Image (cartoon, rainbow over the protein chains, first blue to last red):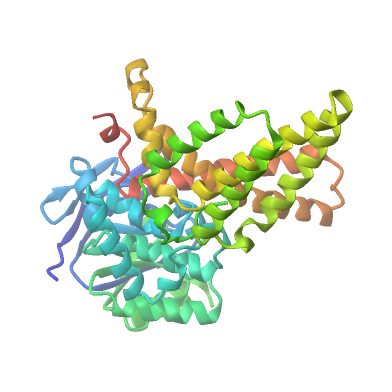
Length: 229
Length: 201
């Protein structure tokens, strides 16, 4: 799978009078990228820039050749997003219908949707959940369904916003395995530093800027030092 | 109660045909005055349910609630009019519900929404968007249990703080959390490529 380059040029994001991200310049090419930082540092805003859920106040964000300010719809097809709380991400009352929801938005026919849903459920070993009502799923199952809904849309990049926060150890390990096996690029915002050990690159966000950018071990050491742990 | 995967012959029929037939049967039931004929139809509706491989377990809670309501209807109608009239009315309602269960439990939620969009398509002429209404319906069904869970969490937290009898102490956090869920869901809809403008075409 050819992965599109993601480029942020002089990106500043402000909400009313508050600057959340200031003058960010980044080029993301790696397959596994982690983003860490304190609460309120700007990690979530940075992640939302990547699939046009937030557009920059100044500067540009490009995914491949597309600018997020101009091609939001196309970019969201290529950059999937898994939110922190899967319960709020699952839209439809039944699991299979929920996975098909995004595919319907892509314009796939009913028959194609059915095939793609079955394929995805099979890929993630959650076929048994297909007919379950969403609200009856456990936290771990909901997170897997949220991931399935994104994978089914076949994006080339998936952004995860603190995906393991609500998971127990077993589900966390399972989710970590799934992320490791993804052919897509994974950009993971997390406080779970162990999750990033095998990653290619980790960014440390502090007060709206990139305070460190490097290999996981160095980035985690920097973050620990900054946090006085 | 949402239809689980059902592969019976009834599940293979188009949703429009099933709901159309249900409408016709429901109207027809009100034209039948004989309780004997209604008993035969009730048996027919039960046979339809069983032939469609609907599991009794799926119906248990709904049936208990239905029987309680029908008991209330039977007693109040019997006291107000006469017992034969009450018996006929209860038989009609029960038969209608059995046919309705047979239809709803063999029709996927997605198929129901599609049917709703088709039926509601004339609403476009008055500026309404059937796709948005149907999404609203599915979100309501999806989030009712979620909001119940939030309510129970808030109530438990306020109990722990000794505020269990204060409705405002429960209502305010409940509304705030509900609004946050709505925000998150709106963001998720966007992230998953939902574009309400598309559905107007």
